[in-house]
Image (tube, rainbow, N blue to C red; front, side, top):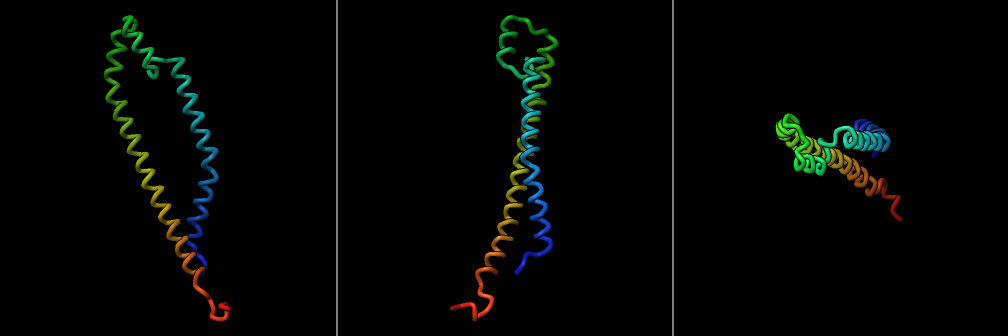
Amino acid sequence: MPISDRDALFIQKRTRLLRSWKPAGILSLVILATTLAWLFIKSPALVNPIFVVNALETGSLERGTVELMAAVLPLAVLGCFFTTTVMIGFGFTALALEQRYMTIVRGLTQTASLPQDASDEV
């Protein structure tokens, strides 16, 4: 029994997505690494805790900078929780798609294992 048109379209879309993921993922990692390197150079107080500790010990951070950092910290923590929540959501979506694949494969293997005609058996 061939698969339904809906399942064939689903597999076709997933195949296109899988082919496009590798370059898109690599590009995303390059952009992320470039942004991090740029922040280390241009604004180390945002990403380098050693810089911040040294600046606090020497008193070279301005009061306004410390106040701004203290105000932004809760937003950064909430952003991390939001990002984690989105990643968990992506996990649920991926597992739901995997379940659909398994349903399609199970349907194909069940129909393939049944003899189509009694004369096929020797």
